[in-house]
Length: 114
Length: 204
Image (cartoon, rainbow over all chains, first blue to last red; front, side, top):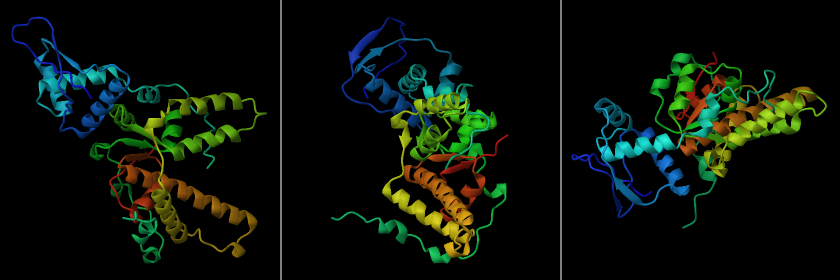
């Protein structure tokens, strides 16, 4: 998967963009997060969303929010934490959303046939 | 180098070691604790869908599924359990079109790359486990000792065991966490083939 390098710039200036030299697979201490983000990035890659180029951005993010995200994925690397959060945000799992909804309930008298 | 044969699967077991019926254990001895569940992709059994529809899925289980986005899988065994009803429901029953539409909607949600199926090894291992359990749990009565109905029933119950074993062994094979409300059969399978690939629940 192409890496998107994101970092907090001290001067707060605009966006910079540069090509990422190769694939960079983040490694998170949280195994579930690792699998989830890998899958989200795979989907984004397959869908042509990822470009292989990285933007360097400057952003002010609440320290507590960043710390919570870092704890959740199990990484202290800000770039990886933000990349994971963005990947998860743009690729919700439609199956889980459907499963947790009230849609398509089987009839109350449904019986297992096998 | 020749590949390992399917016989290696059955050679791992000594079925004759199991001669007395397995007893069902207390819940305390079974994997019911969501918080202790291993960090693995989830595999859903058929009861999960039935309990979801009935609103009987415990909140911690729903929470677990919500927390495993992109890591929830289905097994071909469950797809088959759903699909057979599409063909089975009575076309002359007025409720059938709605029921079929609902079942179809379930299958429409299951992406191919989020579905797994048992391999030949898994089929073989599951069949061996089902055979041992059928014998130890009283489902190995010779045909001649049974009426036609009893014989049919015994075969049906063996098939139930086989399907449950298939689901369980597939979870082990794929290193997934099988989420199951089928406590009775899974308890037996866990005794004969222990693993960390199972999380049980009781419907609310």
